[in-house]
Image 1: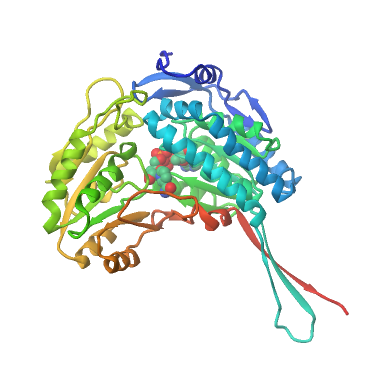
Image 2: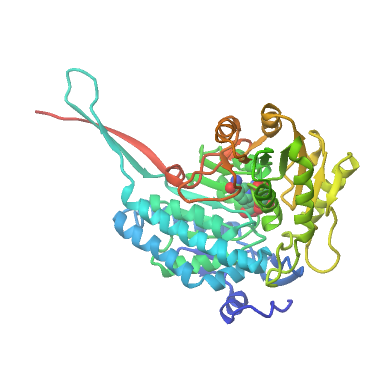
Length: 498
Ligand code: NAD
C-alpha cells in the first residue's frame, strides 16, 4: 500500500487505516465478500487502501435492517421536531469534522482540497440543515367532498415512501450522499446507501457521524461494492420501495429494468451536455470566466458542466481567445497542492475515454484551440481542452465527455442559438449570458432544460429544484419537490354520522 499524502491530519490517517466497510443495523460489519476494491488516489495513481465489497448476504442484511426499522416505526414515528433535531445535528457534526471529510473527499476523488473544504463539505452540512427545517412542515390538506346525501370529510396526507435505496456517483460523493440522505430522513424513510466503488471514504465517515447524531440503528445502512453486483441487488429487491439514483444515463437504463419487478418509484439524476449561450451584448469577460468555470471546475466531472459553448458570431473570436487563455493558465496539480487550480480525472480508464473522444473529434475535423492531451507522469491528469467547429454530429458535441473539454460553436441570432442549444438528447441545465432582460426571459422559457442560469452557471441552492428534461432524468432534487420524491400522497375520505 502506498504512503498517504504528507499533509493529511492524524484523524484522516487513522480513519483510512481502520476504515470499516458496511454499516448494517447500526453495526460496522466485516463484509462477507472475498474480493477487494482498491481505493486509488487519482492525484498519484497509488492505491491508498483496499476494501472488501459487500456480499449479497450483506446487502440482504442491510435491506432487512432498513425494512424492519421502517416497519417498526423506529424513525418515522418519532415526532417531526425530534427528527429535525437529529438531522440538524448531522449538519453540525459535518461542520465539526470538515477538515477530515474534505481530506477524504480529496484523497480518493482527486478534488482539490480547497474546493472540498469550501464547497462540498459546507454544502453537505447545509443539505441536512435545510431538510431539518422541512420535518415540521410536511402537511396535507382537507377538502369537502361534493357527493350529495352523505356527510363526508376529505383529508390528504403525506407519508414516507418506505425503504429507499440511494445510489451515488464518484464526482461529489459527500454532497450527493447528503442530497439524498437528508430529504429521505426528513420524510421518515429508512435507507440503504451505496456510494460509487471509486470513492467510498467520505461516505463511510459520514455514516459514523450519522450514528453519532442519534439516528436509530437500521435507519441508515451503507454497503460498498460495484453497481453491477451490490447496486443491482438493491435495485432488484422487492423490499425496497424506491431508488434515488445519480449517475450515468446508461446505468439508469439498467436500474429501470431491474426495478420494474415491484414497480419501484425511481428518481434519476443523470448526465448532460449543457449549453452555455453567450450573446454579444453580454458582459463578455464575465461570460468567458463563467464559461471556463463551468467546464473546467472539478476537471469537467460535473453533471451540469457547460460543455457546449455557443457564442454569437460577433463575439466569437474574443470568447474563443479568452477561453484558450483561461485553459492555458490553469495550473494542474495534486488535490493537496495549494497552488492547484485543476485536479486529476477520477481514473486512468476515464482519462482514456476522454482522450479517445477528443482524438475522434479532431479526426472528424474539430480544431484544437487548447489542450487535448494526456499529461505525462503520475496521476490521471488531462489538459484543459477547447475544441472549435466540432460539428453537430461529432461525438464531442453530442456525447457527455465528463472531462475538461469545451466544444465551441458560433451562432448568428437567437433562433439559431436556441435550435443548437436544444439539439441534444439531454436536458439537465443551460446558461444564458446577456444584458438584455427580455432576451434572457425568452431564452429561459424556450430552453429545454431542468435548470437555466442567467449570467452565471452551475450555482446550486437547496431551495432550487434540479433535475433533467429528456434523457437527463426523472424527478427533481432539492426544494419541496426533492422532499416529495420521498413521500407518498394518501387521501382519506371519512363519513361522519349525526
Ligand atoms: P455510473 O452510472 O457509472 O455510477 C453511478 C452509481 O451507480 C455508482 O454507485 C455505481 O456503482 C452505480 N451503478 C452502476 N451501474 C449500476 C446498476 N446496474 N445498478 C445499480 N447501480 C449501478 O456513474 P458515474 O460514472 O459514477 O458518475 C458519472 C455520471 O453521473 C455522469 O453521467 C454524470 O453526468 C452523472 N451525474 C449526474 C448528476 C445529476 O445530478 N444529474 C450529478 C452527478 C453526476
